[in-house]
Image (cartoon, rainbow, N blue to C red):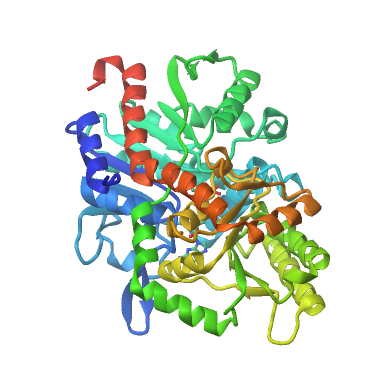
Length: 500
Ligand code: GDG
């Protein structure tokens, strides 16, 4: 059965928003122009949503509003800060928003990533509230909103906002262009009220988000937490059954739609001959022949539970001498947000823990943990996914987690791998056939890894078949089509006269 495609998403958009245009808004841009020697080249993001949304924008047309962070970005735009992309086959407009170093420091690293990110992931020791960061967050959200108001051509265009960097933008867009359909996807958890209430700016943030016609989370529990926050914070009417909030006469629908990946893209990378020869090279390079292999792939972030995973691996090798020399774990961790002290500290701790573990258990011709700390192209990641017998995802809190889905998509049906998945990753809600792990319970976690390493082929096949079925039914393109359909319904509820 063919899976969902960008063309099917385009058809859904045309059905639900006939004659309207689409404006996507995110902090990250889909294409960056950078100086490379004497010329300007184009860089694409390494992975994630930006890569998956691009084919849809290409099919639908429209505009993407994002921070122009490439060092040659400003040289290629027109007088309205627009450039047509993809550069070699232009299909939609990228409208760039400019940020100074100070803006990045305060809006992005400051409020977005040292206040909202740790707050929403319940890691309170890393939360920093600073008025200067907040003031800049307000200013930059206005800047994004202004750009959106200028770019949306049709009266009822769908504006699809992404993430926690832009919580206030919907309110300004609404003031400037009252009839646009505003729908926002929040990629990270929404914490319980008891956590969110410590934010001194909670009221403004919630008010900003309620200017949307629709606000979407990965999970029901996050949606529920948001409703609960509104119930505590605002004098709003909340319809708990329909998950709708009426505030200042405006209705916001709150929904849960778990994101996924481009399944076919990973399946075809996994099946390629290029991947088979890459695997052979990797096995050779890291001395993996005849050994079981585990894999962890993460942005280097404290929410991903990398230190907890390393601790469980230490227990594993300590308590299971038979696995020494027989099981190698590969940790790929790409540094991110390295300007923030908490991330620098994490990187040091990860490196220290790996060195200590390797010192303790390494033996002739075998290193327990292979550490790769550079970003790899996606087809190389696919080779690691295919080669690994076990994937370990140990987030202490995670909106969804796409890595586990990428791993599943890359497994073959005859001899698939096993999955250890944290019960605190959003993905665990739908992947019942993984081995659920609790990263805070090290001994239990270590036993779960052992179970995954030793799992027989029949059980691996049974579990993987169920997880693959789940994955193939909900690809990222189906997620997008569902999002568009729900956004059209939300528009009908808040602007009945303008509804299609
Ligand atoms: C947020 C939420 C939610 C990693 N290393 C390399 C690389 N990656 C790619 C993976 C995967 C992505 O990065 C990471 O996925 P996550 O789901 O862990 O994403 P976050 O960055 O935490 O993002 C998360 C997500 O939004 C989507 O809504 O799932 O919960 O926190 O795609 O493959 N890609 C390449 N080289 C690497 O070295 N090319």
